[in-house]
Length: 351
Image (cartoon, rainbow, N blue to C red):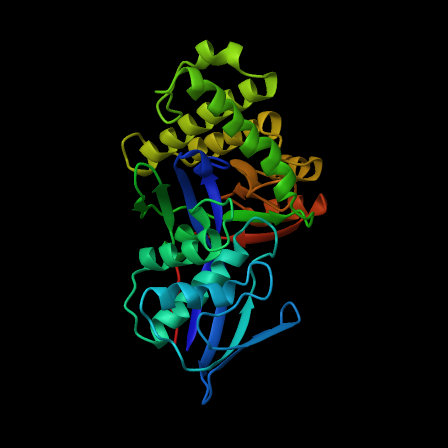
């Protein structure tokens, strides 16, 4: 059996999901797959030739974690706690073309593939949304990680999704056909922890100050933050304004995806550019190299672009429905590695 899962880009809502705000994300035509079959024993063996690794363990529940983020085992433990007794050994090979450690969700796509492989080969009957839920539990909750839900749900469900996590999980899928994007890998490693210490914990600290005096404060609905200015440091004030702006950009894009306002490729690009200004100037998650790659893409005819993922390195993308090859050359002239991509389906079984 072969199961494959896409990577993802975040169109709108970067660094918003952990604040209880929604995101709009798109699955992309870079995928990771697991191919395998049952063995005659109870040993699971993974071969990961793309990264030169192998992993082997015995199905003896509960599986004991022997390394940080022991994800292959955590998926099996989560399913075991849900009542599934998966005791047959498996011989598995992992391959793919999603850029690694670049903000395109290669790790979540791998885990979604693993959950769906087990779902298919054992006939567990889970839907794509449920596969996303199980992956989130195994990847984030099992190890008390700080991440949101965007990666797991967007790669499992596919296409363009709107994901809200509060007051409860709500997903909408948009069927609109989009033009080509160009993904640009800066080949700079991400600085996730450094970025989160400023962007996430800085904002959460500011929100705690506000809620201590104004218990009814709600970032999802607040439109006039000026009364909170005196409570916040300069950095917290800048982050608050940027998050409200990014929330409003997402809502405008959502209305366009839903046909409530007229669709325009140029408007989509403009909204991406405005989002990037906040990410670059106010949240400060972009890098000089990524900034140059985005500007080169715009100069080559892209309609808009932004950094993708947690930031401090990794990837950017540009919306380039016209002449994407020219945009590829422009990005690579700034030292990036570029790929033409399209919006893609979610996790699927191909054999």
